[in-house]
Image (cartoon, rainbow, N blue to C red; front, top):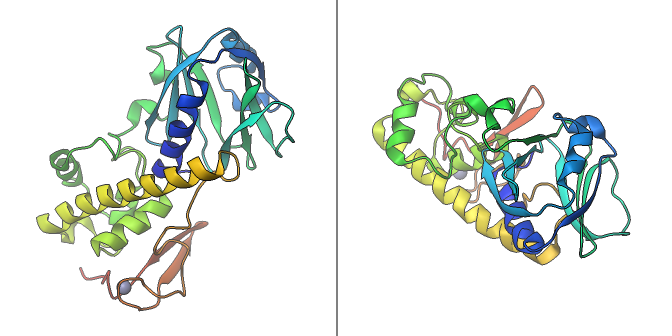
Length: 271
Ligand SMILES: [Zn+2]
């Protein structure tokens, strides 16, 4: 699932490329992905995009007439930037063609992603948006601590709860908790203030470092080969390998299809 560094790389890659371009054609081979109506997406023809913002795991594209194009790529949504006529990817869902012959293509192997075209004040029409917590890259340390306070449960579940805070998912929560030396099943109630401040610092450092790495990778290889870039991760999906900090074996647990990885030496579970 694309997370903050992946989506930051997508927006950093696309923004300067379509800056001066006008949409000339819209195709929706998988029309049901566009929840506000695939036909309506054709009204983008003749328009330009301004900035793309990211809020949690949503990308928000600013249209020059004030509307917002909101994309939630869910598990496998992938963006491509290619010239018209290049070979099409499998499960191609949406194509936005520009007047210089380039296309933004969106493919989605599991077809779970969602697109919405809404008015400038219509973000609340997008499911999940009204209850979304502050973005992980925007939340302050004090706000983070204040929001943690009423949460008693396991810290990984809290970190990945989009109503608590938006943007952190399964992969980066493992990385952040490893960096902070906190077991994923550690209950928030057993964490003192120093633990909580270390968690915040580790979160920001992990995400910032990963954004730099993924940005550089995507600028180098182009957009479209992957939807997530994970080669730099230290523990996630590395069960059985050595912990880069202490050399102990990284553990793995699979629960309802998603894997949690940690090092029991660096992340002891005591309650
Ligand atoms: Zn370790």
